[in-house]
Length: 73
Image 1 (spheres, one colour):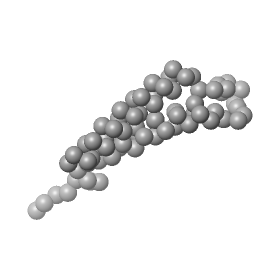
Image 2: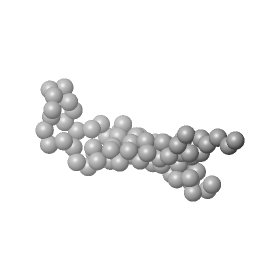
Image 3: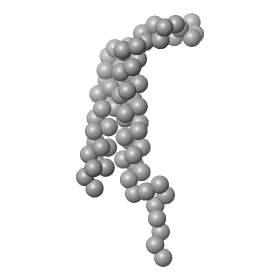
Image 4: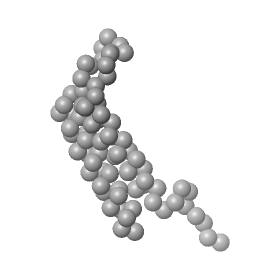
């Protein structure tokens, strides 16, 4: 009897791809188009540039790693 892995063999790579792409894309959009109005009094007017750039880099590295893992095998 052969057992199959729940959601496939590449589940970790798919999750890293999704989270990495969301991290890079979301932070890039926060820098490009900040919200037009604050929802709460303690919200920042614009996203911190240093943190956003760091998250874009980390998310991009994770996305490239996941794509390489999925495409290589």
